Image (cartoon, rainbow, N blue to C red; front, top):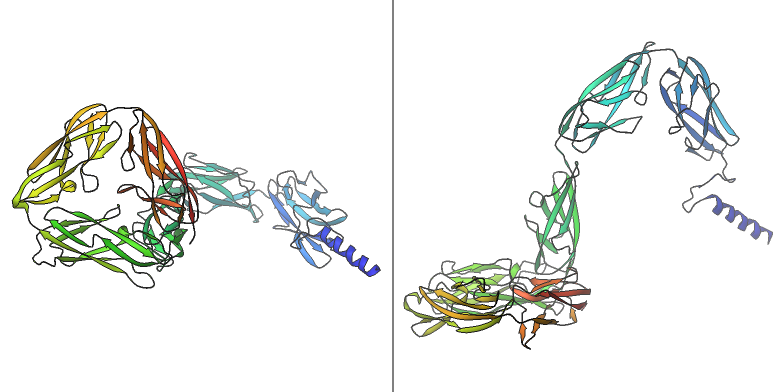
Length: 579
């Protein structure tokens, strides 16, 4: 029992004397301080100069430790040499010639040494470096060496007076011996001078252009997760020595540490290929920054093009959309990441943009009934590249255009909301929708606006109450529609869509407005209806332009879907689950 008690007592003493890593946090009786060794750079110093002492503690011969800041320093003749700087208690200042005894003590443990103060006077001050330069915003360091009348040399950095000739360029810092820091402010030059007891030395400091210090990498939407077979832009922000933060996205070299998981092009656009986490790095010179990117949503198994066969009239195009099926059972639009190759580019032009879907524009009539095959290829994964095709036939009916018909002929819309018009061309009895390639205009844009282009051509929006005429033209033919705009009061906005979705799937929300007259209008795809999601790592917009209200589930979590229309805002929670 006595042995157990002693063992327990010993453990308690050890715990009291030591921190968790074995380093004593206070004096202890287990390994006591037994002696002190004092060292200094010089055995003698000139009057008006100073030097620091150092104390090393010996703990029973087991280990040594620097205890300079723990000891109490005293001089036996303070009028000759004294520790008179409370901010630097181990630094002694020489006052008058003669020898002094310096003592360092901790409790009852003491040690002494002798230092002599000489009557030597300063002969020469030498400042270093001699030709300094520093980038704007950074600090340069200086030291001063004194040569005395007795041919002795001593560091006088601490005791010299330092000045900058042009403080607007650089100012003297507050860091004393063993260096003096000079902080650069603006481009230019300034004279740095060290003066001691009437002697001085100077050098010219040149402040050069700021230099890059660090790079921060992030995605444009703040996300660190991305569904496979989709793209995400990254940016690089450089912090310079003068504190300026600048966009260096176009200057850096981009790289991915795993080309099987994600690739990145020279513009900083990442394409996620397979599930996993890759590190995206931006490098400029010797400075680099990186960020992790998690690819979610399974590996691409196959994809299909819609429509699979296309019959077009020359100069009129159409969209083709690609839907990918993934190894985890999800599906989503992958049109943006595909590369397209027509069998003969002289017949059909293929163009992609930031919107999902690809635009096919026929250039001339095909010469065979089989038409032209267009092949879409997905980026290669570790497995292989996937392909799909669509077949396009083109008929040249330009010369046989008879009429164009705009429908509907009369439309009623609510101010702030809108509708879609379409234009059909008649080619000797063969009808063709030419809405996307027609030219649209409004007789009064203060009442009604109308859009042009392959995505939203023919989309009208009521501005204020009143009437306007919309005209659509194609091939030298035109037709009109009368638009009547009313201004009822908006009562409410509602949105609907799924509350839960599996990560990797594409999903849709719709927005409906209830007006004071009891009418309801679906405003999902109107430009005046904006959609957003608050957590890009959980869900993102499919594309704000061509697929309003469409989202892609990215990774597990809960996000808030928000729709805003006519000053009203409505939100809904979407929970993304794993497979």
